[in-house]
Image (cartoon, rainbow, N blue to C red; front, side, top):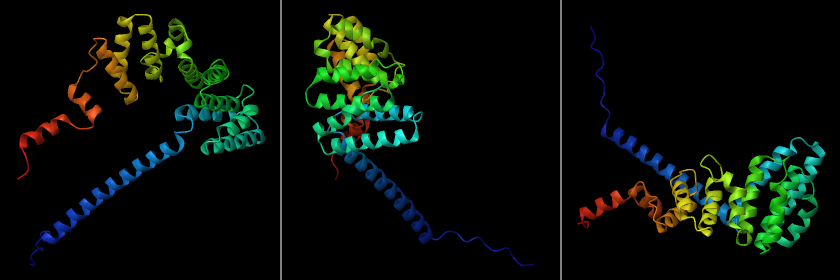
Length: 267
């Protein structure tokens, strides 16, 4: 009776090849991630400068798209082309020409008009015309035919544009309902409302709101950092996890840094 074949143990060469393949795969993943991050950075540099509020434009375009779906195909195509041409001018930093092209398009109550109005408001802010910007933002914010997401961001931008000239109570009354943890714009609206409370000499109302914003993972890190610092100045402790806060601020894990320090200099 023939003996069953003896299993052949993987050779050292095979093991080395598998390890090399694994290292190569890990390296490719790291390179791919670095490329993606670089592409995001380049996009921000190219499109973030002209108006300094890309999220406004994105929401405006998205809201406009939703409403355009109910328009005729011919009208949709024509108005879309006009918006694209205007945005090309914005990309070239030709703000005056872009504003002219958007003026006629911004008249009306549909999504295309709202998107154009938001773009014109951004241009007005870039040109240091806050009153004109606020009027355009208000036109969008007060249009009940538009999606609530677009109206809400327009209201916040309007308040931000004219904050220095508004009574603090007007700020609170207008965007206070958006300064709630379940709001998509909690960070932006909440920060403005907190400053309005401080202008009214109400730190006991501003402090807890700032702490809540700083501890909300859904709020952008830049806003969380500002509200954490302001809360601390007011005497409110907004830090739950010291290590996590240090990691967020410095980008370095404190535990890792202490381990390296304890190990001493490399021999």
